[in-house]
Amino acid sequence: MDFTGHSLALHRTDDYLDQPCLDTIKRIKLYSESLAMHGKSPYLYPLYGLGELPQGFARLSAIYGGTYMLNKPIEEIVVEDGKVVGVKSEGEIARCKQLICDPSYAMDRATKVGQVIRAICILNHPIANTGDVNSCQIIIPQSQVGRKHDIYVCLVSFAHNVAAQGKYIAIISTTVETSDPEKEIDSALELIKPIEQKFVSVSDQYAPTDMGTDSQMFISRTYDATTHFETTCDDIKDIYQRMTGSEFDFSEMERTKQDCFGDVE
Image 1 (tube, rainbow, N blue to C red):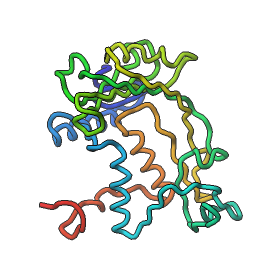
Image 2: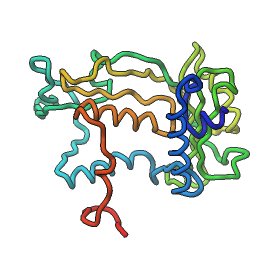
Image 3: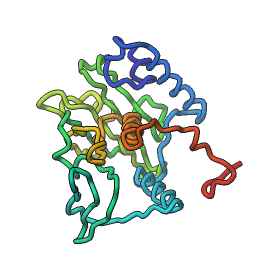
Image 4: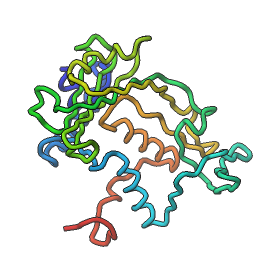
């Protein structure tokens, strides 16, 4: 049950056991189809790290007339009559009709919903009992370690050009439940030993206090403990629906021979 619900369906708690099964079936179907598409794993990880994702967005955005501005300090979100009208930076205002931002830019419109502990560990070996793979995703179901939330371990390495030759990076994360967060990930730390170096941080989680339809400020949720980005994708779809009033239609995004980017067969 733990394997199916947490490793395949990617549920974060056992709440799904009291809910209709259709959502769980759809989640398992997604996992199965992703595994069939890529062979060895249902997961993808970009070479050179996650920073390649915003770079890819910047390049694609430029094709459609978007502008990317780097190293611009945000001095103020300008609001008039209860609606956002722009963002002030270095004395200049970039005008807008809608604004998307994370909670750190609008703390007065966000509320704390929890905390996440993350441990970034540098290793000189693959994780034991994984077949010496250069990357993997490990989910420790909460019931097996006496918790309410799962513990996640994401392993990447030199094979992804994110570490020196022969080095591995294991990222451990979970939702904080006690006053001693680091002790909560002991089971995961034991799993990946020996550890050359470890960096631990605890960060607050925030969620928007309103839908944003009145102010036209659409605030995202902060990243949770999951390492597979399913909840992040859900947040993106939620923001889109709040902004447009309709669900995102993926069928309209099918690539055609007229696309001016990427490879087509």
